[in-house]
Image 1 (tube, protein in one colour):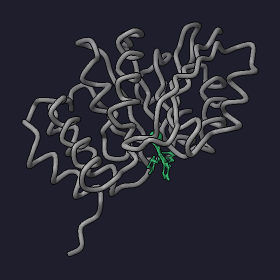
Image 2 (tube, helix red, strand yellow):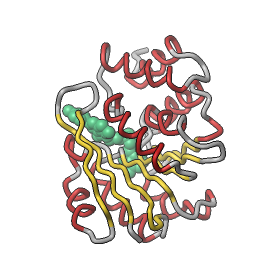
Image 3 (cartoon, protein in one colour):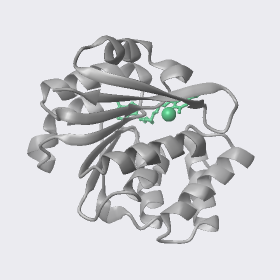
Image 4 (spheres, helix red, strand yellow):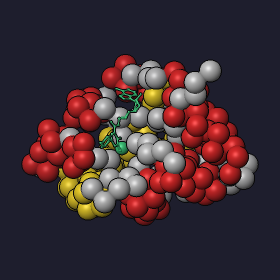
Length: 214
Ligand SMILES: Cc1ncnc2c1ncn2[C@@H]1O[C@H](/C=C/CNC(=O)c2cc(-c3ccc(F)cc3)cc(O)c2O)C[C@H]1O
Ligand SMILES: [Mg+2]
């Protein structure tokens, strides 16, 4: 049967990465996507910026919107302190199934809770379902037109505290203009743009880091 791109990414991980070694999983996916088939992972260049923000925040609770194959899930989870938790939301069951195997190959199942479903449905249930009070870090990498409504929803659900960091992928390409306008003009956020490139290409893209001021 014809395989899908996520399945081919998982194959590349299982063939080329060492079980229990998250960095080798990241390298295997980057090598595959740079040399064989492009895929919408945050990638190695923007991934280094992601790593530095994760290390700086040193979060106890992380929310990722849009798991896809689990590339950024593995990058983030590999940098978390011992009892920290990452909840990642993915509504495509096929992507979720692949991501679970990628996360398992990296040996990070204990730090990651992959929830299958739409962010708009699950964000209001975070407290009651997962005992989360607030998120220290949110990585937005799902549908670009969901960035803004989900950010407003997280505020409404009191999931952000003074100092919570939102890090959004693709604010230039494909772009999230309404989100960018909101976080850059709202007095409740301190925003900063990290210029980079679209994964595995020379096209401009970047990450927007926005600190919630409470
Ligand atoms: C609302 C919601 N809830 C839960 N999961 C959700 C969701 N919306 C999407 N998702 C899931 O996240 C993933 C979606 C991510 C969307 N990301 C993209 O569309 C995306 C697209 C590009 C891109 C750039 C230039 C080009 F020429 C072509 C593509 C690059 C990227 O880094 C991206 O993240 C998979 C999807 O099932
Ligand atoms: Mg992206």
